[in-house]
Image 1: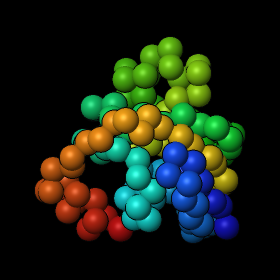
Image 2: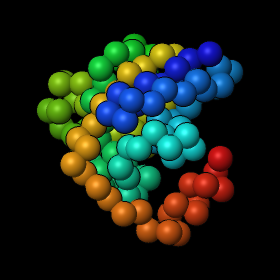
Image 3: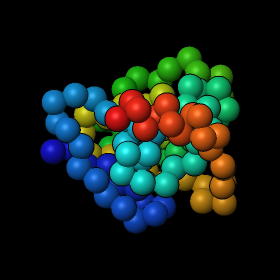
Image 4: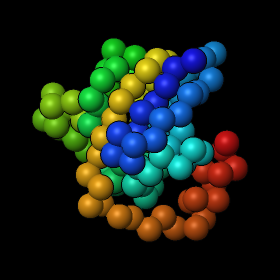
Length: 112
Ligand code: FES
């Protein structure tokens, strides 16, 4: 099964192998710790750095180009816009500490 390693919190999870998995959704589900706010590619809060496994990720989306620009060339992605089919190791700026509005967290929980 594909594995997501949340290196910034030193947590790894195995995900279902039969479908692509949104990295932010997996982080929320398994408490990986990626900060987020909007969940829709608008705020840029969920910026992650791909340490390994970039080849397993879905192509870059318009929202990522708009939010990350040149950072994409340095290996950054938006967790809420990125899906994986294989092993991936990610890090992020742990100084970002975002309080998620309860309504958004509730919606993400329902999407599990
Ligand atoms: S959570 Fe806002 S861009 Fe991903």
